[in-house]
Image (cartoon, rainbow, N blue to C red; front, side, top):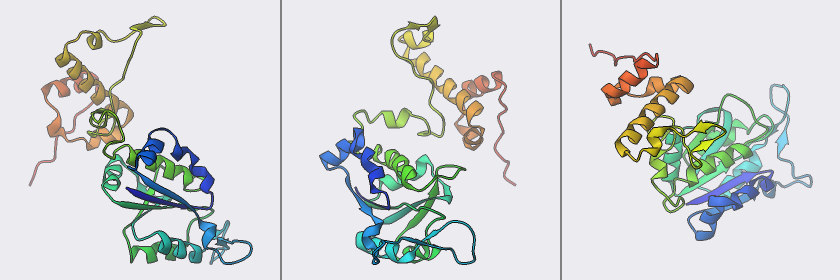
Length: 252
């Protein structure tokens, strides 16, 4: 996979030399380049922003440097972290991980001139995505988060590929609690079922814990989980914990 990141703070991305992303770069699984947007400015002050039309606080990133930058590194699939974007989900990470070339545009100030986004959409796929209902200084931190979510899905990056199928969000549910040695710590015991060696009981415990954790912590995810994927034991565990199961709508 090829990835180009454009930012006025390229130093932000030194963490991408570490851990599994760094190994993916070294092994050739990931071809990552970080570009300074100011490279494509033409004035002595290397200006990338100006006052907004219509007035208002803050500054807006000018279109000229962005246009030249996207011409230089594109075409590809453009991803723009933005508080006005749609929520970034695990499904998006899977979609992006299947692509050959991603371009990340890191906005700052009040954002990028809308004409840059509209013009880019005429030449390449554009996705504006948000990490949540809050505002950051810029897109750099969000890009690092999104990169982690994507790169770990690339074949060969994770040593144990089974981790991808058992973790939170992989099946529309949160992951069950996890434990390691020692079996007793601060008078707290690892659940007996996990030490039993009974794989059937362990699988059932993890399934129920996953359902209960999702229902209590992420009711939005639980509400979206297909009822037809719940068996009798699932429903009994949920109802026993006080969670109501909404039946699917009846077709008219």
